[in-house]
Image 1 (cartoon, rainbow, N blue to C red):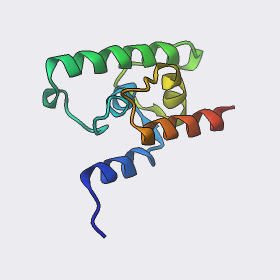
Image 2: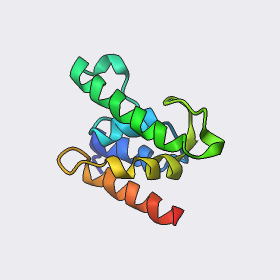
Image 3: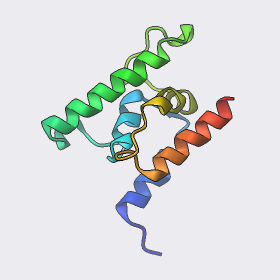
Length: 108
């Protein structure tokens, strides 16, 4: 079986139990969650940083995560649930939307 690089990236992303807001922001923008910042253009990095800040702020509403940073690992379903409201139809890959939806259902 011939797997594409994208399929491999999603394979790992979908199975992570702990993830950072930065990794989720990358995935929501269509990048591999493991992409290095220097691999992005200035505009792409700016959008990833904007999204990761928003996700981090949502997580900080939970007392236990009040001092969380965008690069700190947190239980994946919590980070994905915090990211739910920031999904954009024209940007977020379908597979990532499905993972976020699954995380949301597990939190309810």
